[in-house]
Amino acid sequence: EKPIWIDLAYATYRPAAVPGFWITGGKFRNPFQTSSLFIDPDVNPEGVYAQYTFSGLGPVEPFVGSGFFMLEESGQGHDADMHGYTVGAAWTITDDVTWTVAANVWDYDNYEDAPVSDRGNTSGWTRDFLVVNLHTTVDFLAFELPWSVFFDYAHNCGGAESDPQLAGMDNAYHAGVKVGKNKKKGDWSASYQ
Image 1 (cartoon, rainbow, N blue to C red):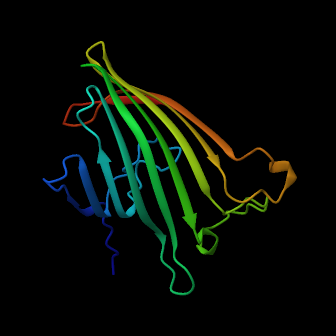
Image 2 (image 1 turned 30 degrees about the vertical axis):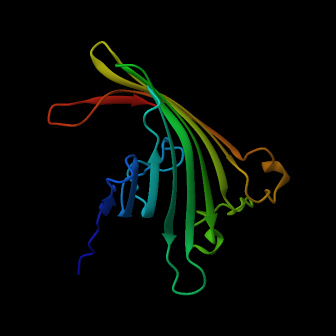
Image 3 (image 1 turned 90 degrees about the vertical axis):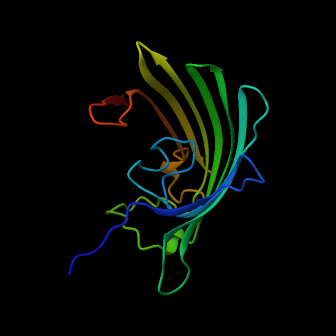
């Protein structure tokens, strides 16, 4: 008996009556403007997500979004899930330069009940997560190649640490640069984070 793994299986609806709005459900790519600080690029969340992008404001396109994601189903007790919210804007400065900023909030429910391994960690880390993330990316062309530079900051507003030695360790930072894109055979990319 071999298990079957599905990477992507989703449906997206874009109503013609509301340009800029879309909703998707199933197992899909990460819809949030963030880096791998929040979610590994190989992980595709399961749930439902909706976003609206405001157009007609010239080179700036603000957006808002919200989603519900299943993390771990439980045969007993409560399922572990996450609610995610985002607000941001993409500014097309020139044809070759776009600056995107976003503020994300991820609220985890019942994560403490999920069968997640502590991997021997006995430091008293909390499993109460309410993460606020600020993200910025600048995409541009240089030397006829696409580049992307990003910075992320995240803060866990959830439960206080139970160990005083962990005070102030509820912040995270992540920065990096990527050159190139992998879209077709022969493409290449390199990144440093």
